[in-house]
Length: 480
Image (cartoon, rainbow, N blue to C red; front, top):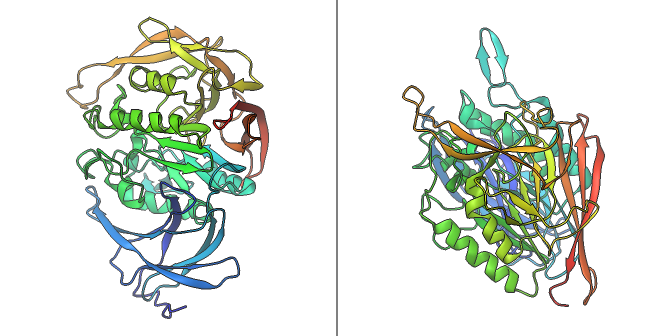
């Protein structure tokens, strides 16, 4: 295979092997790993389903220096292009002197075909990372449940996974680099076999790591750079197409009022992200090969949890009118650490919170041409769940502004306005942790296409799970 004998004493291992799709998931895959020292000849050997390695792709190395520890991290990204749609591959990742690591993946189908994807956010790590009063503790909001979710995802074997932000909460940790390594050690058992596609959350904002704090996120992932992005904003918002599904990933800190990261960065794109989003949505809805528009983002427009983060008026002001105008079908979020979903919403009340208006109240079969379904899927493993904090009857606290910075902490406190929640459909009060699985059925020309959605509570260390609910999204095929 052209890989030298391992030298584990003097050579860093291939750590945190993981995959990402490119913009065209049928033809582009990125294989990534990281080291804490420079390496030579980082590369990926690509094989077929028979195990024959026929192509070699060199990896591009990028790095950042963690501002807190001074530790430099090197990430290696091999861009595999020209792949065939709906094709199984095996691969190995290596650099000189290291034992190669193996994985496999399947490219997305081209055009309308059945496929499955999954989604959760707000994970953390299952490991202990800080010594406090002689005892090791988890200082990044992780829990043992953070180790159960990747095993659950592997049980349903999706084509790809949507990660709805707040990946590992490294910004809270004493050792941020160690926390990222723990995160990848945990998730590589799934992410080396299927792309884990992230939207950045507020806890990816790490003080000193780049001008707006996202340099670690931007180094560990190699995501498609978009028109209007700068070196500061590269890879923070992007899109991909898999079959008849267009997935758009947003960076909500750009529009949110809440001061939730290590620095307050609202408005950092100067409107560039919104301009790109509208162009992307307009093109997707005009494309007769695209049936479904799915948005993956972190902070939420809906939540019925009390004394937690709440919904953010900034999202309702900036994103929801665009979702309405171009008929977004589904939004998956995190930020609130529980599971709930909305009725399909379309339009907003003329009040202080711009309350979303439900277009229908049926919960088993939902016509997404009537409105957008929002799903909060934030039970990825954090040790601070919010499923025991629901308002009864459903209500919502909306962040409508923030105070001036506190002189001692520098943080801006949220200003909340409470509203009724006529848009609230289903929520899981009994269980804290789980993920959603989405099965796309393309249907037949001239008819309907559907997505069957199942939310699973994950209940065991090997990913044991039980379905909490199943429902169906439907819409006419765009080629009808």
